[in-house]
Length: 245
Ligand SMILES: Nc1ncnc2c1ncn2[C@@H]1O[C@H](COP(=O)(O)OP(=O)(O)OP(=O)(O)O)[C@@H](O)[C@H]1O
Ligand SMILES: [Mg+2]
Image (cartoon, rainbow, N blue to C red; front, side, top):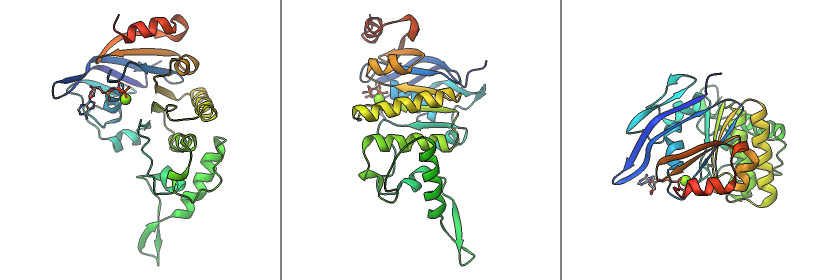
């Protein structure tokens, strides 16, 4: 089986900070790869290089064997690589439907020629997408900033599902959530994995990592400190790797 994503020896620096120093990884369909490491270890930098937000100084990113280094975030998303960023990346003032379509809004023509947003289609499609995932949002017309953290995460995930992402990258998806909402997000991860989606899951919570992941890659000050099958490691070893021992 070919990997969905191959990161080959990427380097990235910001001024004098070396955020990624020769990181390589592979992600396969139907698996959850955890990225772990202390604050500032380079986790977000690595996934932003995959999603096209940052360009690596050197090294390459490939998708299904094709070199995609240098593509912008829209091009990467169109390939089926959806990223849910640490800071969530929903448009707070807009409703759920628009958020699911963000950047890909369907248009209709008013009076036959003036292009306007097709809100009705977006609303209907949003209801369907959320229902498919078993997500309950009572009022889809309110701005998403009024939704709970878990609902917001769920909407970000359903956006990925709706657009049939083959790769889902989640940067700290459970950090800001209450316990029931964390459960929901973890269940969603399980369902997507069963559908063959490849998932990269960043978390500081080792319990979550051990619960949902198949493999773990530990970064330490921009370097890969180790990579293990979850079934062949434990929290002690992961913590030691994180601390560079
Ligand atoms: N845009 C940027 N400009 C300058 N420095 C940056 C930028 N992005 C990241 N860095 C630096 O690169 C290093 C790695 O940051 P990164 O955000 O990748 O860490 P992280 O592992 O995601 O940390 P956290 O767990 O706190 O989210 C840090 O020292 C950070 O300050
Ligand atoms: Mg981060």
